[in-house]
Amino acid sequence: MQASSLTRRAFVAATIALAGLGFASTSRAQAAQQAYQVVSPAQPSDTPGKIEVLEFFAYNCPHCFHMEPMVLDWIKTEPKDVVFKQIPVAWNASMKPMQQLYYTLKAMNRLDLSPKVFDAIHVQHIPLFTKGPMVDWAVKQGLDKDKFVAVFDSFAVQNDVKRADELTQIYNVDGTPSYAVGGKYLTSPVLAGNSYEGALQEVDKLIPMARGSK
Image (tube, rainbow, N blue to C red; front, side):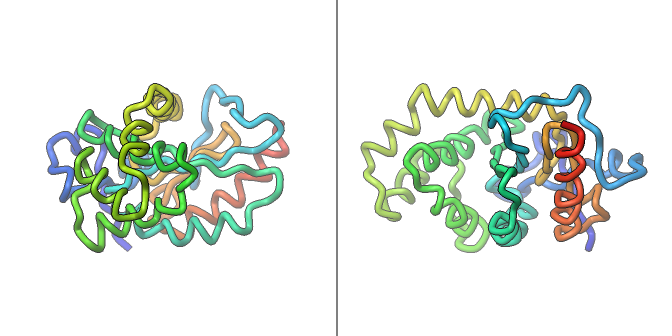
């Protein structure tokens, strides 16, 4: 499998609806001698007593779209001391609405609709990149329009977006999807040999390493 690579700089020059996002940078992968990188300094968990697995993703990322079913299956088998969280990434202001969409669905307890966002963008080719189309789409999913808009524009969602941006910088994420494990390790399909399955297998290997280094 050949993995495309789109970093922040490349993405700025690309069209958001067409380009999506690629794997973590190829140069980083070529320099790596193993399928993961050590995060320094290690980051504390936002969920005390749990090993956090963070997936840095973007709705318009084709690789994230292809990995979504695998990730959903993986979640069903995660250990009891592991908590999985998705972190929507925005390389520039044009991607902010997609972050807001994710956190709006989360705040409304409707993350069950998140896979449908991927489907809408990558299969139905609905341009869910700005607020207007997102509102129309949400209403078609049975969500109350006024409530959706209020949550979408809320201070709480803005704070979530800010935290997502902070985590993206802290973990030095430069491509999607990427996976942080226990605040100590970072892996991706590129680091795992250009393999979707390999990335999740690497996450499984890193969990006991993170557990053992508590």
